[in-house]
Structure formats: C-alpha cells, structure tokens
Length: 373
Image (tube, rainbow, N blue to C red):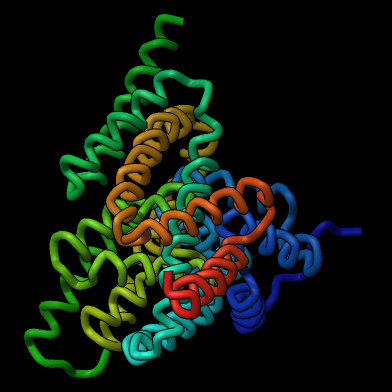
C-alpha cells in the first residue's frame, strides 16, 4: 500500500490548514504535531521522510517554526500556490480572533471585571513565557559555553535591545567559526502620514520575523523594545495583553502582531504588521530554499550556527521577561497570583498555554475585582 495518496488541490490544502489554524493551540511543538497527524497520518499527503525533512530545515531557518512547516508542506504538495494556500489558511483564524479582541479591547476596559481578568492573564502570560524559555534552554543546560552565550545575550538585550538581531547573528557566526576550527584541528487608499506609519510597521515586523528562531517567544525582546520603548505604540501592559491574546487564540503566538498593528494604525495596521511578520518565512521557504535545498542538505555549519544562535535567543528572552515583570506584577497581590500560577505550571506541566490564560483570568477576576486585593 503506498505511503502517500494523490496530491490534493490548492483549495483542499487551504481548507485543511484553515481547520488546523482554527484548532491549533499550545505552541510550535503542539502545532507541528497537529500538522503531522492531519497531513501525514490521516490524509497521507506526505511521507514521514518528507515531513521530517520539513521540520529539520525549518528549525534551521529564521521565522516562526510551525508556520514555516505549514508553508513547507503546502509547497511540497502544490508548489508556490500550495504554500500560499497553507499560509493563509493557517493564519486567518488567529488573525480574525486577534482583530476582534483588539477592536473591543479598549471598550472592555471600562468594565471593572475585565480589568481584573486582564491583570490575571498578564501574570499567566509571564509564566507561559518563562516555561517557553526553559524549554528553549533545556537542550543546552549541560553546555557551559551556551550558558555564557545566554548570559551575554541577556546583558546585550538589557543594554542594547535594539540590536538583539545582530547579537543572534554574531552568536551563530562565532559558533560556526569556532566549531569548524575545532574540527580542522580534530490595500485601500490611506492618508500620506498613514502610509509612512504602515511602512514603519511593515519594516519593524519584517525584522522581527526574520530573527525568530524556534518559537514565537524569541521575538519578544526585539518587539517589546521597538513597539513599547522606542515608538510608544503600546504601553507595557498593552503589549503583555497582546501576547496573552496571542497565547489564548489558535495558531502561532506571533499572530499577536495583528494586535500591535491595530493599535498603531487600525485595521490596515493589523494587516501590514501581520504581513511583515510572516513575509520573511514566506520568502525563504517559497523563494530561497527551493533554489539551494539540495546544496544545504546535510551541511554541518547550519547546525553549528544554530548551536551558537539559540543560547543568545534564550538570553534575550530572559532580558525581555525582566522588562515585562513590572507590567505583570504592579503590586504584591499580583505577585502572589503570578507565583501561584508558576507553581501550578510546575505541578501540571501538561496544562496548555490557553488553559493557563483562562485560569489566570478567572483568578484575576476573583482577586482583583470581587475581593479588591
């Protein structure tokens, strides 16, 4: 019996990834598992070898991991338009929900209960980021050089947050040189001012999307500096709320870029920011990689680059976590709730991110709105 079935139509790819985008929660690993179960095991569109190669190559590329795997699978099935169909289907559900939340976000602030819910969700978001940080760091926990890299990455993020992408690139290149040396020895019309703002939004999110390695959380240091500290599009509290919305909606965390874009420039800001975030991955998977795929297969220097880049990413996320702490814990009662959520996450490691957000929201409503602590 053949391992794969005949290739589906572009529309069938779109519908399948629309379903995956609407039901996928839990971060990149869970999303990739969902793609594997649907496209390989149930529909038998691709073989195990094809899927494993997609995951391996996408891990080595900058960009949100699960989104790029979806792009790759779509490309393997029906070329360029298959990749576009998978991309759009995968992102539309999360984008739509984030947009609705952004539209009603400000009016809901007038409701006292919602403010308590948000305070609880911010604490939960902080814990989810910490969990993601630990998972990213786990493969490197016994490597002293990686700890040094993470420490330097955290200090660099604290002192020069705008240059975090440069530190990731530098860490990867140093790792390549060092390891190879060791081996050798052994749109609608808008106002003109809005066009300038949309251009800035596109550029900021394009840069962010080009330096996400492994998980959407890796983009937080750069985005937090750009949209909160440098351009003041959002307050720290609003930024953390956007991240929380990204966690509680289906699809990749980086769909939170739609929330940022909406608050900077309305509906078209949401569209442009989202496009900027995912454009680098699209250009790589659909444009660059097919040209050099065969030459890259099995190259050790790509793995060496990742070994040096990932600890810098971990350090940068730790630095961003420290920056976001005051927004999530403005008073002692919020600190107690956040610590409690941390204990819950430790005792129940299989609790999904969206479950943590709901728990934080419910407890926040009880503690901050009803009990008024």
